[in-house]
Length: 367
Ligand SMILES: *Cc1c(COP(=O)(O)O)cnc(C)c1O
Image 1: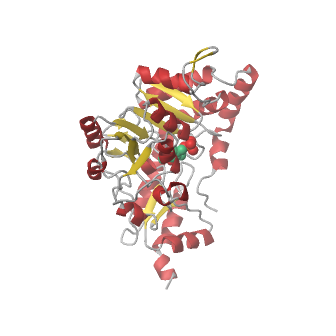
Image 2: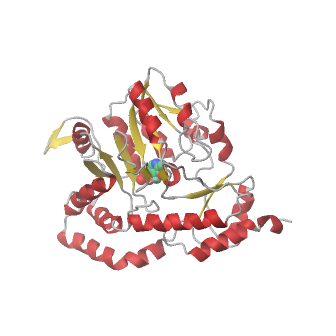
């Protein structure tokens, strides 16, 4: 069985280190806002390259709070993509703002920069950029457009921990950056977790209060906030795992290279890496018109695949009354063609060879 993600393999290599850390936290009896969190906040923001960093409960919360902190209000518009995980867009609608969808680039699957400006109105306040699958979006032109139209840029880095754009780590380029530590991410906790990285001190102070009930000091609440924290146990686990992030990303890149080399690109559209990108391959996504057949066949051979994502957000029931699907043909076209093949640092190269062998011979098998 080749699993899409194999937590047993991951944990077996980390068991000792992690168990010691968890035991330390439990023995100290300090479960919220302790040293592990402080340590992690300073290490991870340093890794990203921002002055400030804040551990929160999830990537979804990070995105929600980013928009709230920027005072984006009812009926104001936020530009993003429909080809993403639901949280990117929920963060906008949960703030009563309006998501406006821009189509994606057919090679990188990230926002198509050339299509942003036509969607900007007097109500537009921000752009949420998603570095999808681990490939950075084309940030320079995005930042230029944002500057010209006085818009904030929020980076959704939930799939791109450690990815680089022109040598700069993603999450250090926009106004506020959001990360998820959901277990399968390139940097994952053993539970929920998220992070907000930013340079601005004023916004940071606001976010610090916001994620802690809006509290400025004990028993004083400046505005309505929420409880969204990264607990000590998860922070301790992340402190262990952060040391391995670059090594793991390199493993992902190596496996992606093998896929690229072995897969028959006359049958499959393989992922592209732009010259400006250091792609960290959170996912390895290929395109084929026979997507469903391929998934069924691989599953018969005990190989798990997934689809990220089969239904774009604007086609979801939750967004029926919200979002227009104006002019996003690539988003609509690719969702029936994409398939994510297994890729994670614990996958073996012989397993990649096996998968490619099967995929390259699919046509013969189907007769
Ligand atoms: C995982 C993910 C999120 C949400 O993160 P959670 O921690 O699960 O809330 C947001 N955006 C993208 C692009 C993601 O992949």
